[in-house]
Length: 342
Image 1 (cartoon, rainbow, N blue to C red):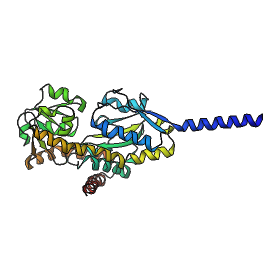
Image 2: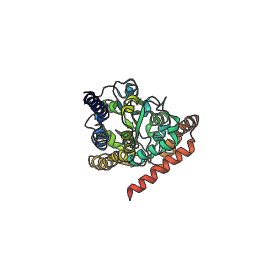
Image 3: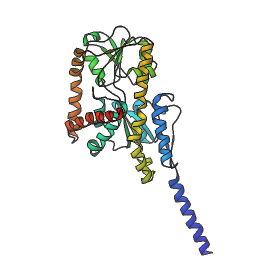
Image 4: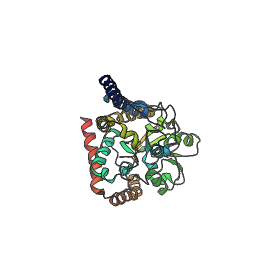
């Protein structure tokens, strides 16, 4: 009887151990609408790939609607309101400064290349600063370079912005527009349609024309001024509650970490494809695309330099060789993009 009892106990303990490592359910919040390319072609396929590669040991539930507003994602994960999420880094810039290298003007080459370049830069230069100490960082994403869309006449010089009202994401583009003499309304991208469709702004910037098309706002523009490298590119952090992360087996943690680099950046490349297709659609519908003239670029670079300098100063304060990190990030994005073109 003792042997039978011991066998039963041992079997029960083994079963319990297997069950404990069999499945970790992760509630992953997404505040961008479900039908958006971000969810359909990037985030959800990536989460599905994690479940596939971990053989079902890590599974995700994405609520149909957001459980918190965009700025509250980070704190909601820290507090355990949900297990994982992403956030635009402009909303956490007081506590996380280094990945904002991806926000710096005129550095965007392509979404796929810059996303992988930022992860590589983080690993090489930023990880030691431990800025994400309250959560476990899963990955980073760099969006498309910002352009300047206008409802009436094209923006071909900084003088064209004087006295106008403009929509922008918070950050460097907003500062550039202010320096040019525009009055700026700053809000998250998910609020852009509400502002632009009301007719209260003459110019909308900081996002790409494709972004504005996805948010249903490009229809209100007649002109788009293309900025080499972008006025800025949105940077998002993907992260998980530390307690939830620690429940995941080390083998599966390694799988997730690997998938956060090349696989995630490949999926993010859907934006690059979408942008090229969008420009054809928008041009056919009457939107006129203009290359930014040299004088406009000279002014924008002058207005954007304080943001670059401020980032470098913050990076140095965190023990990072800012010049080396920025040089590496830009060169790495160009190197990766050149490889994609082959």
